[in-house]
Image (cartoon, rainbow, N blue to C red; front, side, top):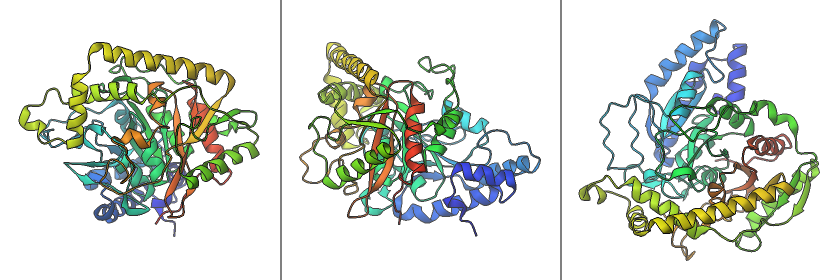
Length: 464
């Protein structure tokens, strides 16, 4: 008998259409899986069992009538507890946020999912206000890696990635301000996409400004393309949102990579120390792209590490996030968050504008780079998952999470689309991710290349 928790969203929709199984059966199986994994992995802030089953029953009735209400009717999804969800508290991983309602509004991406009939099975964990690249918070504790619960799931969308990895819903909504979709996708062995900034509208506006993207985590690129087709539409509440997409991302998947110009940068010009097993897995994925017909050149984009500028923008955003809190509430915050809030509050407007200048120059350089290359391929993260409950690996010498993820945050600064595709596992069975980046507005190329890897048998990692 088919294990419904192992099916992709595309497969679920096909099964509903054929009458092979019902949305209620699929959602019940996902909820049972979520309840089973929760004690060990801690991927959820809350599960919405009865409400989700009622949504599934209504979806089943629509499918039986041959009248599905949208492209995801009856498909189980999860939502990171950063994004507003009508009827559920959105606590952002913080004890300083009151659960008292009313919670009457959906974020734009959540609203689009609801319009297309998606079934909301739960809210997934996040570090407080999504501030770091691992997932633990004073509110919900530590989220653990599906492949080894002693390790971190990554973050800040760690609960979302863990849920997808373990079959607790094929689709998840995450957010990415410096790698927060791609890092946990890499650590948990799933697909994660940070679309071009503004492709998925965001409301309320993030205090982290135009660093903050909304994107899907999924089993594969085809599911992510389907989800992006649904959520990547304009919303009047986001003044910075892009207009309608130029076409269907699902339809664009079949283009393949033959003839695409791919720049392979194994270490950003020697700036990043990459663990050998990670480097080897990424190189094999690049070789597969070449076998599929891409023109691969080993070369590096011309930029120095922009971490200082990123810190200025990120820490300033964190200070703004908690500016409204009283002194007593601030004592409830994650100690690391309190530290960066203090740093952010000390920056001047001139410091901030200087960081914007760095960002604009980086964007210029990458714009020119993509005149020569369609895609840039790097490791997603230079390491695999480390011990759970720590911001940085023990003995690494890093002070902040940005020290161990230098491949991700540059492309938040530039607002480019970037994804993480599973590229195998290391000697400990921990997943490795390969990052694919394209010029702004070329989300279709990122998804095409990722889909080509999946079609060729790459893009997989073992799960426990």
